[in-house]
Image 1 (tube, helix red, strand yellow):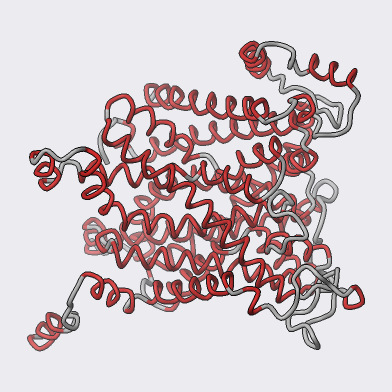
Image 2: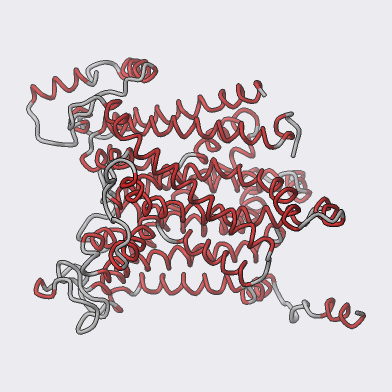
Length: 297
Length: 315
């Protein structure tokens, strides 16, 4: 019992920690979710960036004689109806999938971060009104309003990403607001104010750095949601338009030939699952690492 | 209780207002002629455009248009489809039963999967059962609902040949057979979310003092788990039903498209694809209204189960 107690106090002590960065890295390395998710995300980003170097064939140019060729000879993952290489289309498709999802979250951050700080700082009826509006939006599925946007403005990735980005604003703004509310009452913020520093400097130097971790966590999980929403739009023919390679569009083309050539649907569907899983795991892992109090539950 | 319902109703009115305003004004702010956008950018003669402007009141001032449109909404008139030359309300009423059956069936299946799985995972915490349940939840939650559907079609329709892959079938047993795969698809996706919630709120409930007391009294494990732990764990589970319903709304749209079911979701997507704006507008407002009513019902249900909410205290 005594030996066990001693062991318990000794065992969790990490190796000597030099900086908050090495502390962060130590925690990440000991979190399987963050490691697996991070590896998947880095893998996907590398594929998206180096797509032209990796892809064995042109993703939009096909040989009609090879239409629906099964995986194997000449085509590692087979060919689609137009005889285009499925693997190359998957590789290039990572660009619209991951890039589109990043765009959605970036738009939501550009609007959401200042909005959250502003609402918390101004308080009163402004805060009340802004939070009321986003609380309402939070309960409403973003994809449904995006359908109306597409019906009005026409299909396409940039329009869909912009609409989703705006509808994702509450997810980020809510977090930034709650962090700001706490930080603006902190002693060091008071001190900065007493020293006569302006609002701008206080926000930039004290408030925003403290928002960084929660914003990173929420954004990572939002990327997973955005991937799913954009894939759904493309699957319905409302997002990325042919012939641009995209996983959602490939899945919908794959469903048409599911009985004879299931490889097309399987390849693109599994790519979406892998990407969403990667960002979900990374987001969950980062929450454990960056916000240990939350993670204990 | 009445006060709770009234205050909830009052907060839901602005949401309805917000959504109707967004769908109404959006099409009017699109660059170009709203009359042309209403007909999906088709080639059309000037005389017809004049008629459309008149029919959709586009010749009136914007605020007047809005006022008239909201007035129509309140009397249940959602306008007229340009493509199908039918009242939007008629189209919705035709399509609604199938979607309601699909949604209800999916919800029941999701409970049948998630509740036992979540309870077992919590009771057998940190065993292989728990790990398997968590992995199931994470994997299914990462799969788009239409891909889950395609996988189920591939397995149960094409490989095993047990169930039909497309269509809604005829009435009765045949319809049930046709709806089983779509409902299972949606049910699995919903279960992925609620399994995690059920598990975590059961874990929380099982660590409470009253569980120790119940065990110390010598009650059977079954009684402790179901009567004492699960009843208390229900509150957070029901809270997410509102959230699940949001998922269910989008889920039915995607699943109907995947399985070729002619419900409300397909009506909406078909209208979006041909840019039949009156239908999109009407269907979106209708779905939003149902969504809001269900959220209200969930809130009231929540208050019934948890007296702390009912009496306005803090949980």
